[in-house]
Each structure stands twice: as structure tokens, then as C-alpha cells.
Length: 274
Image 1 (cartoon, rainbow, N blue to C red):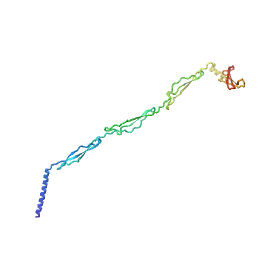
Image 2: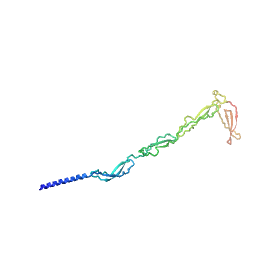
Image 3: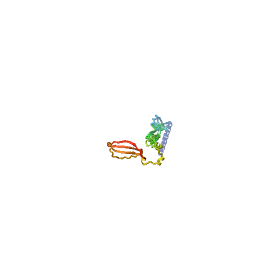
Image 4: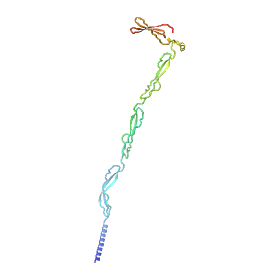
């Protein structure tokens, strides 16, 4: 009896298992494979106009997958946009130092410069605005002016009509005059020469005769005056001086009055041996 029960139970299990498998096979034969279907929206605008941005779009599932169909993707997609480089506007570098003045004096000029390299303009960027070079005046003081001689003037009149006089010729340091520390004119501004070397007329003595017969001491002097104070009372005269010119052989009467008046009465020629 127990064996019969075990046999019935085993048969029932095998029958149920076969029935379930048949049902599943039958169900499979009826199901067709369905993939997921998604409807996508429009792409968003790119957040950047250059230099690379990311835009996106959203999807909506319109059909679920079935019977082993393809599953639905992520419902947000991303895409790179505007990956081109952005324009770079140019920028000025620092100013350079001033260069040397082109003139040592009398107002020259000097320059300094800068370049549009900080940064340079790229990808259609704007160039630097303004000037790349500046100029200013320098060394505005006057240059030194060295003096220059004028032409020589005419010789002056001889200082003596005979027996060796002198003449002078001059020029001035005025063409131009030295200015602003310039040098004075080199050389002399005055020349001198001997003139009228001939003997004076009426002398009667040649140089040789003068050497042979040297003049006496009295005639050697141009004028030797001997004043003798006399105590004469000549009326209005107080003191009488007698003046002798041994050169010209003349005698002068010079009177100093009591009233302090100097009077020269007259001169007389008189002979005496010289």
C-alpha cells in the first residue's frame, strides 16, 4: 500500500512539471520581442559662445521594452558645443625706457615704445588701442657758442710824426661773441707796429753827429727850469720867479701876486752859449 502511494505521488509531480513547461513554451511562442521607444526633445542652447560648452536634451519613453527587447536608455543626453577658441583682445606691454636724446643741446627729442603683446590679439580679438610710441623734448639748454674774431680794423694814426712812433690795429671777439660757456677767441686782439721812423725836419743833426757830439747836460733835457725866489717888492708882485729854458734859450717872468694870482708876464729870447 505504501508503495502505491509513493508511486502515485511521483507520477503527479512529473505530470505537473511537464504541464508547466508546456505552458511556458506555449506562452513563448505567442510573445514577440519589443524594444523600448523614446521620443527626444530639442537640444538646449549652448551656454558658451566659444571655448567649449555642453548642451543637453531630454527624452520621453513612448514604449516600454517587452519580450527581451532593448531596454530604455538614459533620458538625458549631452553634447559638446562651440568648441572653437574665444577671441583674445590684445594688451599693451610696459613702456620701455627713454632712449638717448638726439641732440646734446638746443632742444632735441627722445622716444620710448611699448608693444601689443600682453597678450597679443588672437582668434579675431581686437588690437590694442592707443599709440605704441611716445616722444618728448630733451636737452633744451642752449649750446655753447665759441667766440670768433671780427675783421682787423684800420691802423691808427701814428703816435709821432717822425723819429719812430707806433700804430695800433685792433679786432674784437664778436663774430660771434662767446656765449653759454663757449671758448674765447684764440690769439691776440691787438697788433702794434713802428711808424714814421724818419728824422724830424730842421733837427740838423744826423744820428752819426749826435753820437760824435753828445749834447751838453743842460741841452739834453727837454726843459730845465730854475726857480729863484726873489724878495722884490714890485708893487703888486709878491714873489718873482725867473724861469730859464736852456733848450729854447728863452726866459719867462712868472709872478705870484699877493692876491694869489699867477701871472706870466712874457718870454724873452736871449743868447747864451749852449
